[in-house]
Image 1 (cartoon, rainbow, N blue to C red):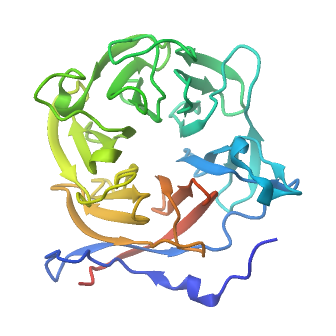
Image 2 (tube, helix red, strand yellow):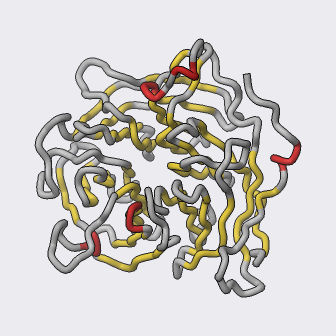
Length: 351
């Protein structure tokens, strides 16, 4: 049964500029209100473990991947939900599937999900021996695997991954970009149809491990903007690096650079206007969603704070937006939930 929700959680989440910022008075940024009734209660006495990924497909259906193994004794009496769950826009479960099966190696720790322009569902995993990404149809039929669990790996290995964190398919080129990840320190690109290796690069667009370059600390996300720029989260180094499709370095965007612990840049998503004017950044250490002006990468403000109530965050891990601009967040550690934040237009940034 859900806890009682107070009316206060319906209050508008107004963007507040971070302390010490100098945003002009006429700057505007997106604003959101949490929807405490989304998603609807799960069927079959299901309960979620850590929710480690979220994606939105062309139907505006929301997909999550979660970790059934992270249920604990406090979940007594509940049933672990399947790892992959599809919700409709209203928050009803459409279908659920996933887990070990014939012909593929399910990751030991689910991490990241993406639904591409052909309705394929891609999954990654960051378990100690996870070296693979998986491709399924939306109905859960296995299509392809890249990499084998337990294989030796390093940043020069083009056949296996190193605890990959996230994937994206570029619809323009039909290429798969992998944030690789927890074990390796690179972005690697494959042909999304055949799995054939194409290229890879490390921090600053240089070969991983090259002397004189501060390496990626943890390559935790990869996103491809409509203009072809590739955004990569370097979580432990509190930065987003931006590249061209060929790996050419464009710029670096620092986010909460004094953050320690698990870092400030866990995920990145774009606003849905044609220019993708804004960046949203999940900060699981400080439990904020940062809002940035994509060009030049200036922080405009943030929303969210640590807590368990609707609209609050605990280890916010991944983000996705739907066609209406609504924002979805997932939480790991003991957060174990997905939340919806309804887009309410633009508002002046409050100092």
